Length: 121
Image (cartoon, rainbow, N blue to C red; front, side, top):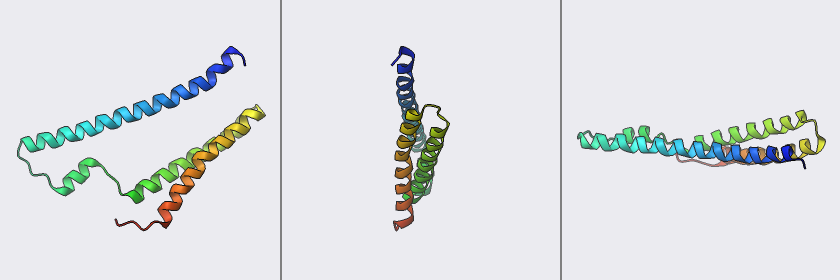
């Protein structure tokens, strides 16, 4: 492997780590903002209803989460699979298409759980 070729997978893993770090950073900042809002409401003597707390938390039902995760993962898997067709090198194309099957099947599993599970929403 030449020196420039080694940077391609290294860059890919660095970018995946960067995306995850940014996601978790902003998720934490969002939770801190919600907690600060609740804290200030309590300090000012406002009554916190369960409906208000539910809206502030932004929590979705498990059924919505399963559907959303399933659709996103299936779309990623399909996009990765078709991106494998675009690659010029046959070995890389084959590996790319095989790796894209993981999110595709995980997404299909989420969609199956969404369809078969009886939620208490």
